[in-house]
Image 1: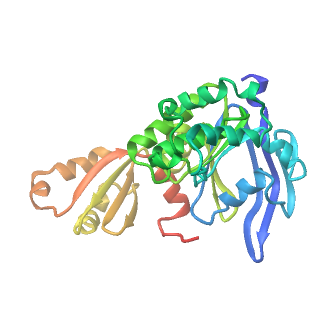
Image 2 (image 1 turned 60 degrees about the horizontal axis):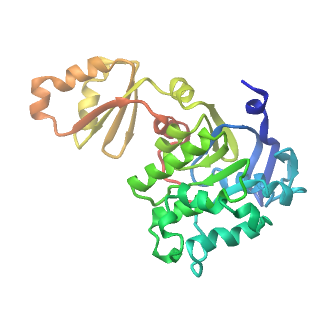
Length: 316
């Protein structure tokens, strides 16, 4: 690994931030390496938003230190923010401007000259697949098109680090996949990405490393494969239906080492021996009488997330 790839572009050292009695960030140690895509995951209220605000110098830690691109935050926040891009949860595009004008006006915040903008806006319009609609009003865009424009806008200053706060929320599958393609293209260019998302398949697909936080603390970290191997069996069998639990209770001895979880009428069997379960499920008598359905799949990052943070709904 080269020194440029191994260098740290964002660093938290023993950072704490409280709001009254709420410990939003509680002793956070975190490094983001140049050239990687780091996924910052956690349930609602875990401290992700506060962590992002601290990283961008929009909030001052109660203790500890935050460094962004080698600059102490928030004291040098303006200088550091001029070198990063941010894709917020909401698009915040100006409805009074055209697509091209939105990019041009945003560029002025970074003091970019007309000479610097020559070619850059056209390149970003092509990146967002909006070059044919450049002079149309933003209000005519679909949700997916607005997200692509927001992503393009975040690149106007050629940032070294891009913060992506739930970039595909509320998008249909086609739009999500197109955003993924664009993010993968940024990774191929060597850009550093910090991604927050509630879509575990998105994190598993895009991220080199994952950090899962809860109650302001890191509870797990590693590559998606490392986390799955460490916390979950290799395969999962899902049983769903009214008789799923009773069927399982009668056959629990088939695989005593399997870990069982339930959520509503769904039962999850985490196992390293799918054969014994599939044989039982495929038995002719079971196929005719069982009042439930099932599927067998490899374990994934969502299984890890739910095991570590629980299946209960969190409102924040």
